[in-house]
Image 1 (cartoon, rainbow, N blue to C red):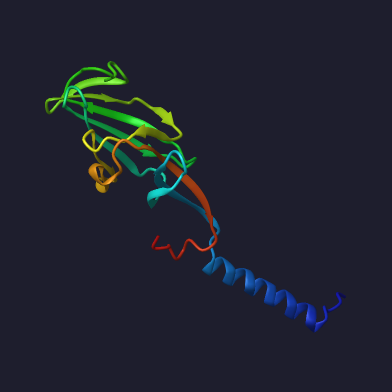
Image 2 (cartoon, rainbow, N blue to C red; image 1 turned 90 degrees about the horizontal axis):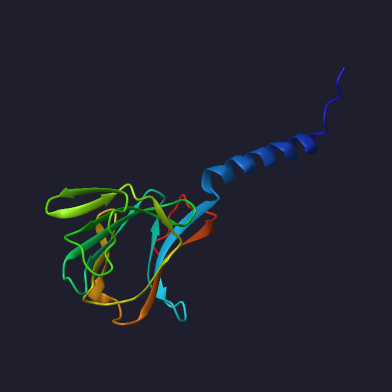
Length: 171
């Protein structure tokens, strides 16, 4: 014959199980990824946005010397890095890579695909005439001329632990 547990022990166990169930419904500890563009020198944030792994980040450039479009397409990874997938460029010139990945010609553009090159961050001296825009999943998040001209900038993904991501923040 088994002995019955005292009432307060059964009540405490029931309350603990109930609390764990409620916690799992309302709280979901997880990682949020925040894309940020900031000054290299003092890390002052100019722009931030929540992103998720597999989001597509695209830089749209006009080559400073050749004055031709140059488009770089990346995937945001779960480890806060970026994978370069494709470069689309209207021709070759100073600084433009050649023969990266699989090279083809589509819609009057040289397309280098299947590049699979990883980057932890992007550091550049910003030019309001060279960078036309940055997009995430096809939506423009930054218009190049809105960023400060000839300033050293950085674009990174910063992972943050979120205690309550079921209710996303508006920031």
